Image (cartoon, rainbow, N blue to C red):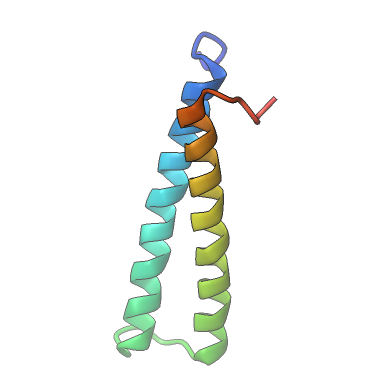
Length: 73
């Protein structure tokens, strides 16, 4: 199924999925900071680093997909 979709479109879908995961991680960080969920400073630090990588990957894949450049293959 993915072979019939152009690479740039798959790249854009991956960028959207990574952004959605970044939103989920941001919500997890917020719940830990507000003491709704258990966790400490190290968990928040780890999740913030993960959030940074997810956002960076999402932005890069999105910009390249918008420009029409495939970097997946």
